[in-house]
Image 1 (cartoon, one colour):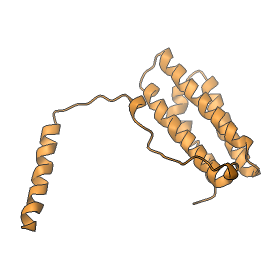
Image 2: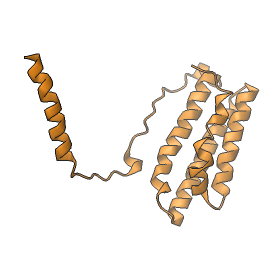
Image 3: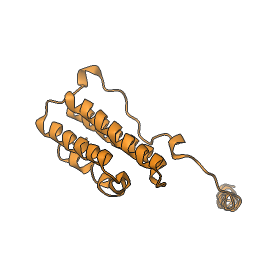
Image 4: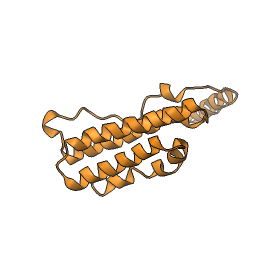
Length: 147
């Protein structure tokens, strides 16, 4: 009996794939939830590097998801959306940095924030999104404690 069930499973998967092969679903990137979840920072842990690093990586991840809605187009609306996203991420990183006492983490957060601010003020924010943004989070790696 178990062998019949195992034989039916691939058949069901093939049938589902065949039915879905002709389907196309359009989903707006803004409607997809961010694939990252973090509990609020306990008040006694504000400024603790582990929590600040988690928050910083979440800010960058949320921003990347938000940027996905603007990266495909070349119009002014898309460029402004990217600029607003970069400015928003920079402001949130500055807020995190304000409560940090660790000098190396504070400096790393400042460097990432400065990069994002420069990208927001640049003439081609899409170039930064496709270039420097891909590695900007690595500036935090040395300052953030490993879990």
